[in-house]
Amino acid sequence: MHLADGVLPLDWAVLFTTSAAPFVLIALRLMRRRGQADFRLKPLLAMVAAAVFLLSAMPIPVPFVGTCSHPCGTGLAAILVGPWMTVVVALVALLLQALFLGHGGLTTLGADLLSMGIAGGFAGWLAFRLFRRAGASLAVAAFAGGLLSDWCTYAVTAGELAVAIHGARPISQVFGTVALAFVPVQLPLGILEAALTGGAVAFVARRRPDLVPCLGLDSVGRTA
Image (cartoon, rainbow, N blue to C red; front, side):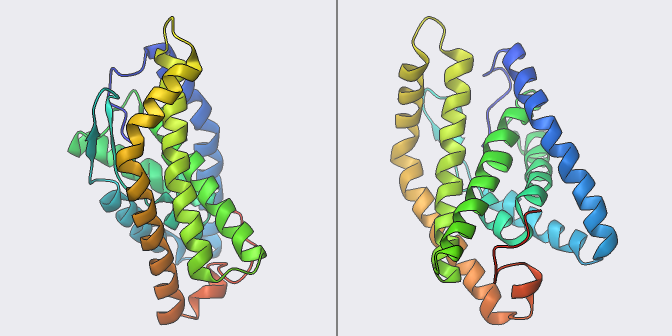
């Protein structure tokens, strides 16, 4: 998600950044701890961050909203490295995009991270785990994770915009307007991202079955 600088009032931008900060601190602490226990973590995170960067760097402008639609990649990231590490991955991708591509802003980085890296990452991970617990295959569970992650990201973004810029209008009215503006593009994009996520996870499991238990894809275990 790439809200541009100036879209959010400064007080709301600060509030969203403050809300995202604890997640970042916890994620960095967990990354340090896991990195000391497994030297493969940081290279894996770098590869996943590159994938998220590329997937989310294909914007389709959404008129009247001040942002754009695009695949997110954080559902796939959460399945492969866990939701907490996805916070770090999304932060890196969003920061680089804001600095070098003009996608999103620095004042809105907290809001973008809340929607894409935190809400999207945890929603995708939870959907994947629930479907696996219910007996779904890796591909089906990953499809559900990718879909919910994508759509949750844009629902949260619509909520952020609604509470921050509703003015004299009811928040629900602004939320509905913004959410509907995303639908024509994000509805099919979410399904395509879900298919990509399901295919990617199935590919990893097929080509590198040794990684399935290491990544926690065969159980409902790891949460970080």
